[in-house]
Image (cartoon, rainbow, N blue to C red; front, side, top):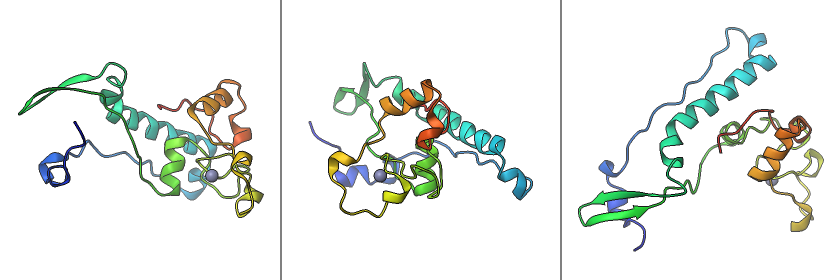
Length: 154
Ligand SMILES: [Zn+2]
């Protein structure tokens, strides 16, 4: 068994809109810059994303039986890619959305002043993983790694 063939996967009836993500709007520019507004914005984003994908994630360990025209298939859902621009990726990963912070990349822990250093070796780059990010949040040192001190749904 392989992937669903392209012509089938690209048909309009093969996709559904799961929902829209709410977006908080600040009343004023000064309110928009407050820590509590940023925090509320991240919380509502994570909460909404959790509602949308929780039905899939609940089956990630045991799978489920998918009824098809050719019988039942035992399936394991997973998210292979989430596409987004820098602010969207920062929202998903709960990293700071600023190139001026100490660790501005949502994928790795490269320091701000090393961002344009093309001579770094692979072993000099520490990736952000769910494990090390959770560890920083649990230890209360998330802000030292340009990470919001909040539980990530992933
Ligand atoms: Zn990076």
